[in-house]
Length: 524
Image (cartoon, rainbow, N blue to C red):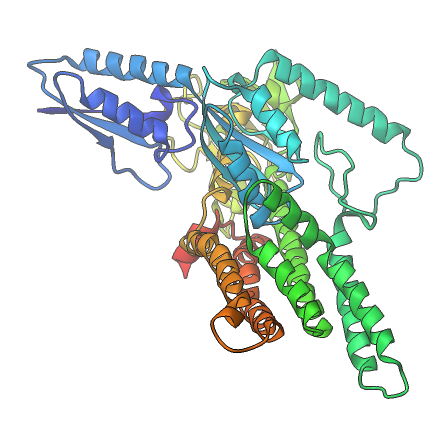
């Protein structure tokens, strides 16, 4: 029995990682081939390229045949299944993300869908049954805007690309023609983002509505203790608090119920209405205030996390000094090819992953590796060698895009294109990891799935308790509403997703990049 190891990205270039379903499909198909006894993902170093290990009988099948079967089977799977990692704008919290997830899974041909509250959508689909156009239409039906895709460009059809180009041009014209629309320092608009800010107060509408709700509730509650102020004044303030606190909750609950789903949004809304029916307007307004504030803070945390990742992507410069024929010219990093020579001036950022071929300097690698002390870099011994496939490059010769050169000029030989750089792969990994839910998030999602309908059924039963016990309907109704209000899981609805996103965003501000909820819980 002999072994052969092949890199997964070579066999399946579009899969995001070794845990993808396509890797499992490949393993199952290859293990059924005669002469191949076992196929599994090999144990590798954390930063190493994932590999498949083949155990085969050389008396039955040759090593060349094993490699040929792996490549041909991988090509068939790549041809059949597509992968998309899309960034969208318009997702406000994790409950909305779950609703979008369900709507995407309804599309014929979509095999897997995962949506994060921060706006990343990961999809696996059968290319023969659906395509990017159909998926994008469904996303647009959910009032979302596609900002960009981190997936392989082959997943786009020509029509999709033209459509997106037209959309971007129209948005650019609209922005140019708009008068009186000013942006304060710090506003961020990525390519293709447009100007949908979410409400009359812009992107902070939900937070402002929540604050107004709390203010009206507080004033109304205070007035209720002043004998000289009529009760109807407090009632009007409570009704105003209901409006501002329940505006977005009602909107989302109606949309969810229209699609046949019941989530905590709906339960909270019914509980607030029940409190009002019981005459406990203050309690109902407090429920809506807490829930709307939790939503607003969750949205704020997601925006912070999104900006942290965007800042990471902006570490690398957009241009490079390309040396050709003894002269240098400034070009976009996307135009750099493997083996090109770029010049890095003192105290400037390095534009591409590569090896030093001329010059000596210290490089600050903290943005990529976290090393607190600059690392000395020296030229490689053989400057003519092809290093793009060489995994044994010494640390003293290797440089990364986004790192900062010291006091001397360096000449660097490019070994990876911009889309394959360490920084690009890091950003992609973080975006993919955002769609992976932590164990606690999975538990709360599952609990919520059964908890909401269970409470509604219990309340329905309690409404008719007067048929069994000797009491008026008003007493049964009061008890049912009291149970509904008491069963509203404010902590469950607010705490888990907000805590995860806040933790990730806070760590990013401190220079620690955590992939998502699962790694965050593993650290604990």
